[in-house]
Image 1 (tube, rainbow, N blue to C red):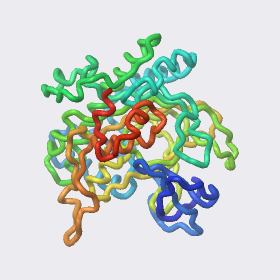
Image 2: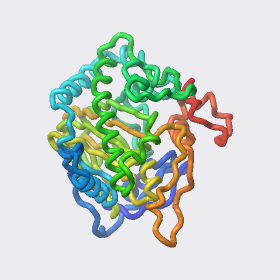
Image 3: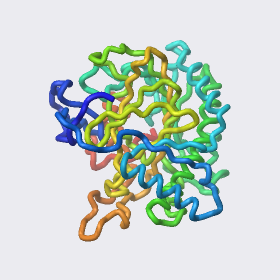
Image 4: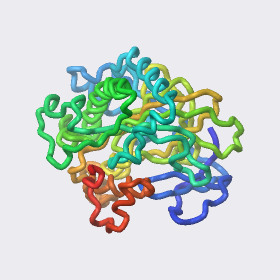
Length: 388
């Protein structure tokens, strides 16, 4: 664990970073926020709970409800949890890590063939230091490749798998792939088509957690926004005073995130009292966390917990987060059951796609899509701007 931090304070967009020994910065939505280093911590979670999914498909409603209650407690108290006995084959996981190592060892030119700047949807390859979530550093010391939902790619086969015909405005290409490495697309989709069904099982369990029918969220996730981000973190200096960081402190802009991480420890989670808690790899598990859409839907009862990646091991690190969000046409409001008697909802109802574009464009202000619409008033922004 590292610094002790105080409760969240004001955003600092457009201001000079304060002394990094006294403040920690993190991204929340499209804003940069900070917390002041505190003198004395109080009590919050000090470890990440583990949920056993062995009986997630049990015919017993009571058994499934018990899993839902455990997940509710984990989301409410921590915003993070491990899952074990999840059903993803171990040989596929090993194969996927080998795939990541093979891709990131390719020459720079081959990877840049699918550079994120060539893709209107802001997906593809990002080289080292191209993003910077912590303004006190030179940039994030990681390289990444992002792909996600695309209803016209045959590997996703939305109509065949769901029987639902997608709305015409999303039937456009959204992913970009390196031409000289066709095996990369094949391998990524092999994993994608296992992790998406697992994520959808968690959607049903979370509906139960809110005392709703298991199918209550099905319509919201008929055509979900998904993102799968392959990440490579090279070794960074082990000196605690080093300003380098793999991925700066942030809260995920998703509904739920499922992270496959290798054996190299680097993930740290910020608890409610301002203490960085280690989330080390646990064999046979994924680490899951609440995103900002679920925080809104739960009226803040489930926090989108701040986290960061610091690889101080001297070893290469690979991870593969999967981000799940409801469809861009969904109107997202606070669940009635999450508004306590005598209180009002903390969040207004909002279109999922509108909120998404307001997060993505400011975060990637140098991207051609952002530049293209820089003179368009934010009130006229729409998710379709990412579709070319």
